[in-house]
Length: 216
Figure 1 (tube, rainbow, N blue to C red):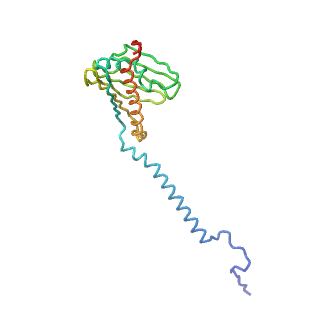
Figure 2 (cartoon, rainbow, N blue to C red; figure 1 turned 120 degrees about the horizontal axis):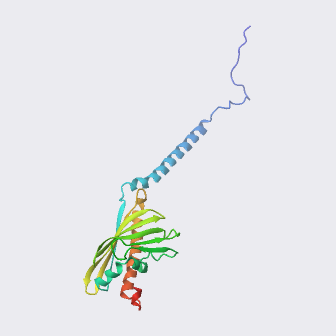
Figure 3 (cartoon, one colour; figure 1 turned 180 degrees about the horizontal axis):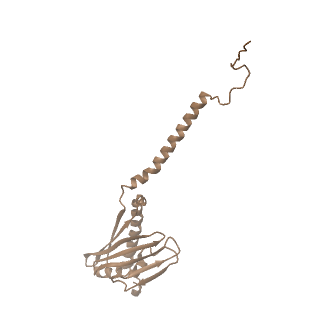
């Protein structure tokens, strides 16, 4: 006698543990697609600035001018001295302790003024006179070693306007490597604002000198 086996599921039996609900599968798939798309979108947003920076300049030039109601020779003789920048430069007037030293003969080729401070807003660096055209232009090389490292050229020049008026032009040429060159435009505005303030200080100082002439 042959006994037939019945493999049909009987009522009341437990469903196999690996059975899948089609609705749940579709919902899970939609969720995974959403996560994947969000991840790709986020990656693209992060990559865009780095991509844009590839096509932006890595060098920028900032120029500011001021007309000072003093003779050209007097103005040039004042600005050629590195020590005098302590009296009108906004960077030299940042609050905080610093050690300032001067090497060489001030106002001549090769003279260097150096500053050192533990305050990161001041840092460590130096400014050297690399060229000088008497009565007209002074070229500098500004080196920073802390809190960042850079070497940038700059210059100041004087132009005759009238017997008692002089046009002073200050120029700074900065470099920002990739990808920080993305912030070149912000750096230009920030440096330009500080240069304007410095030239304004210079104008007030020369047009309204202290009673004690030795102070300038």
